[in-house]
Each structure stands twice: as structure tokens, then as C-alpha cells.
Length: 149
Ligand SMILES: [Zn+2]
Image 1 (tube, rainbow, N blue to C red):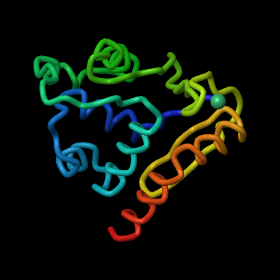
Image 2 (image 1 turned 180 degrees about the vertical axis):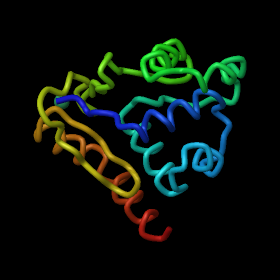
Image 3 (image 1 turned 90 degrees about the vertical axis):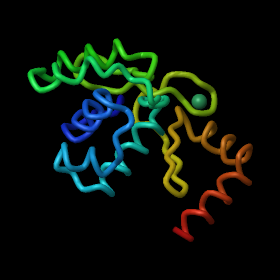
Image 4 (image 1 turned 30 degrees about the horizontal axis):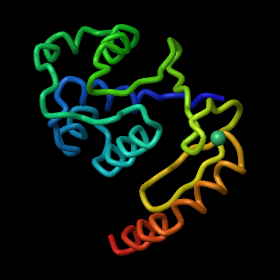
């Protein structure tokens, strides 16, 4: 089953789409979502592969249009921003996940592996186990870093 984006996710995406240089605090002010939530949601969207990277050269001409946009329109715009956002969103705001190990589509509920601030999604427990095995060292390292924060 694809992951459903909620209003908060879309608000944050819209905000970043207008200006990718915005700080989490600026996004928080605009979206009325707390800064830690913005940060967590942003990281989740990155983890889902929805945001590939936010570059500092996002087209600022899009900014003024933003306020008038409905959900659908803004998603179309998001899709056009493929250079900056790596989107797999269908029309009803569902994110199609790809397995982080085999790269295949995730059917049904994804198997999730959480470590530190990160979440990885897999098509099956086998892929999750293989990923863990392959990246064990890195996962432990990130867990340690997370604890120190
Ligand atoms: Zn897989």
C-alpha cells in the first residue's frame, strides 16, 4: 500500500518548492507546524525518496503563484520540479515506494527499518534483513550518533 501524504507533508513540500533554501524554522513559521515536526517530516520525505535533494537554485518565480494554488495544482507543479524533487506521487497523494534493497515496487505494507533519524522501506522481510546485513556498520554508527544528539 502506498504511503498517504497528509496536509502537513504537502504544506512542507509546497513551502520548500517555493524556496528550497528556507530553514526549517522558516518553514515552521509558514506552515504553523513546529520546527522539530518540520525536520522530522522533511527527513521522512527524504527517506521515502520523495525529496531527492533540495538545491539552492530552485526557481523563485514560482513563489507568488503559490498562495492561490489548490492541492492538485501544487502537486502538478511539484511534479514539474523533478530536477529538485524526486517524486513518485499519484493523483490522490499517494507515494509509490520503491524497495531500498532490491529497487522493486513495494506492494502492500512496506517493511520498515528505522535507525536514528532514518527510515528505510522494503518490499519484504528478506530485503530488510539483507539490507541490515549489508549496511550493519553504518546503521550502528548512525544509531550511536542519534543517541548523542
Ligand atoms: Zn526488495
